[in-house]
Image 1: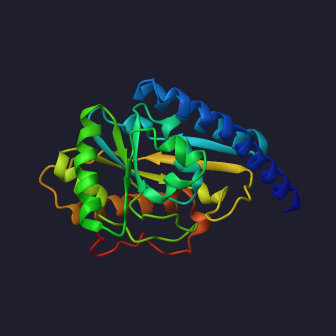
Image 2: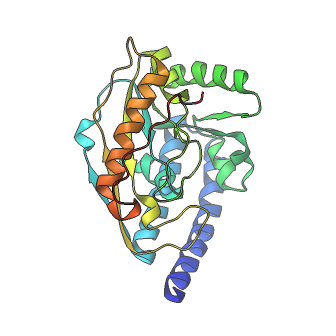
Length: 256
């Protein structure tokens, strides 16, 4: 554990040492550079962070099912266990990603400031109707530009082996815009648990499911299908995290 702690501390120092100059460069360039250039600059730092986790802490990634990614408008709906997938997905996906996230993240020094210059959807969770209107309007606008929207249906990071409350906001957006949804299973808590900066060496599996058309579907029913696939795949990829004989739990009526 001591050795993991030392390596993790070096990784955190590496993040701080790189994010400050990178974010300042983004802020300067964003005054006259295009949105796509700013996005690529930010993704460059995220790739650097993921490389740092691999080199310093021994965190590897193993990809499955990326051939399932479609060509058209998509709402990506991943399992959310740690910071790793937030950093990794922009560098793994073939299209620019538009995250839906709480606006408080914009106040994080340097990291949040750089995020504010990107095409993202930041919402005030205390104003649910206004938040949904913003997601629907901006989600469609960004998808029309060729971006993919990514939403974590559980809303927050979930401990390894547990199931969060799957909310139907992502499937509601897909139904409203005609986009397909893509469920994604991620075993990141195996190496980087939530609310922890102690990283353990190992392999994170990222498994992309088949795209599901949203036409003619109800958001809640569609989210139940997404949840069933993700939780079954999580048990296949990380069986040690789940008690024997426990099947994928499904929430009867996902929250909005």
